[in-house]
View: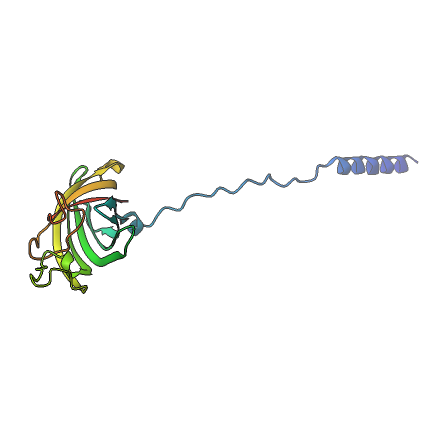
Length: 203
């Protein structure tokens, strides 16, 4: 009887201990943390932007000139490609579309000041170039378009981004003047001026 009682007691104690044993709990799930992937080195040196101008020089005028460049040296030298897209027209008449590609080099000089050089090719009517000489017997444009290129050089300054990127203002001089180059409505002091104002951004 005593053996039976001891056996029964041991079974009860074992059952109680087993029932009180806590089930293993899964560790709390942590919310995943997403880290921003660093940009590749070549993307950090990529520059993009362009020039924009809107005016009313006796007619409606808009200039959109996108630019893409790459920083090739640690001293802030940027080399790139661009395009000039210009529309001129009057509100009650036909318009004129001028376009062409360009190559450019930009070099940081001091803090926000930079030097800029480019070579542009423009497709425009013959009377829109410095090389146009009107025929005295026929003073009206012949209505034909042609390609003509010209080198430009100038300087400007950035506004913001530590003086190396951001919006900028620049003055460019047409080295082909007065024999070559597109007559820009952005000319300083008149449409026939070789000095051109550029306003845009490069990020």
